[in-house]
Length: 297
Length: 329
Image 1: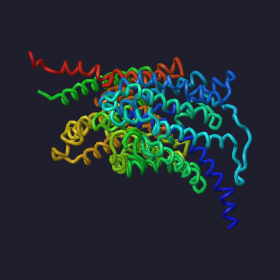
Image 2: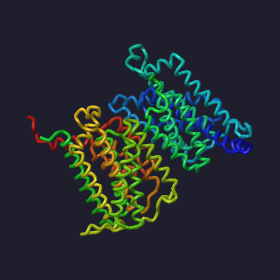
Image 3: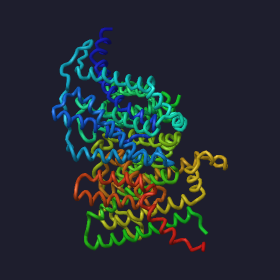
Image 4: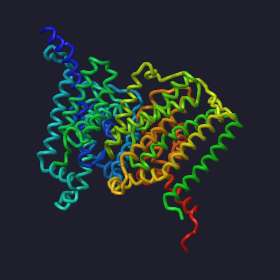
């Protein structure tokens, strides 16, 4: 019996905690992705680069001496106009074409390429490691957890809760959901649909930027950081159900736990094929994912 | 009086003929000057144009965006490399690739064709990711290093033979091969089967009312695209002497999509011109700056926004007009 407890305490629990930190990180990135899909029906292939942009802006602002806690507010604020301009200036141009899914996907894919190379041009190819704003560690039931990672878990939960509250419990959120559900009806009721779409895109981009600030101290900052992370975020969004906030949370926690625990029993190198395999099976069996969509019921 | 589809296909044939003649001149000049670098680069461009051709059959004719066509391209490259390392025979490598591509294409098509639209794009993307990661982690397949030491082969046609080490010879061989793939796709898309596939893109819900199955033609188109991608990939180890897992990665699939969209979706020939254009651009821009992705990405975005029919959308209508006899006063 005590052997089982010890096994849990020293082997399983630390691994699950590592998985939970990764889970929160992925959820933060996937949140903006799912909101943009749920409202605009756009697969934002450049979302990973917006996440990287947030991290790079944070890096630049930190280098001129701004404190980390201020960046948590400043960076998402700075990303809002960026997202707004990208939606109005680029995505709107192909949004009304017959094959919207394909054209918007291709356009954001191109944008991602340009952004990634621009980061390399401006910041160089090498990784940067920002200082961790909270040092020290805490002992939870014998598991050693750095304080910053604990902060990330709590902070991530707060961010997700706030976003869900805004979308489901405020007048603004109701307008946004109405625009997603039936844009003509919403427009005739006085909802400024165009601004809602651009605003929702900007909001998703700002969330990606916030994730960039929060995760930079853990995962370092480098030009292709978005590309590596976005695959997992996409998987989480698909398994959870595109456009669903609850889906992102459930799938994010589940998939990262599968990844964490499977890497204990099978080699860690196989965790990616397992996770992507789950995504393929999910798409085959239940393409709409675990939960419904943001604007639809 | 030919209908619009036949007319546009004929215009594509004219553009391919121009491309083939220009390529042959390029090969002769290259051989006369004793060039290796540009001939090898041209061969590689043609190989990736073959991959783009398969993407266009799916995107331009069947209406399916595949973000994982590198799966079949890499599959072909690995099968070809493995066969060549055992028996250095071109025909054995191609035969094995064809057989494997049909089997895996059927399996992949069965999985991917369960969903439509954007989910199709994501499921093909997911399948390619699984395959890429599996190859990347399998030591027997060289893992992250890939397979090195594919021997130089002599391709024997009975009346003549071409060595894969000869830059001009292998360029012409690849040109002929990609031309055959193009001609085959153009022929198949002009048959009643091809019209059915095009009908699927236009309106999938109405096709069953005309008495046709939608499952079989879509799966067939998917398998044909898989075979074309795999056969193009099979040439890669003959050119480079190695294969690496990068051939399976998303970058390869993404580049093929960029190629098709820039060249012109639904034209077949756009894939060939797009492949050459992007290779030339990469090499020209690359000689000034290492940040060629910015240029290519911007060009691609411009193509998506302003040229929904790609470069061929500008060129091809002019040729169509030339081909058309002045019927109306």
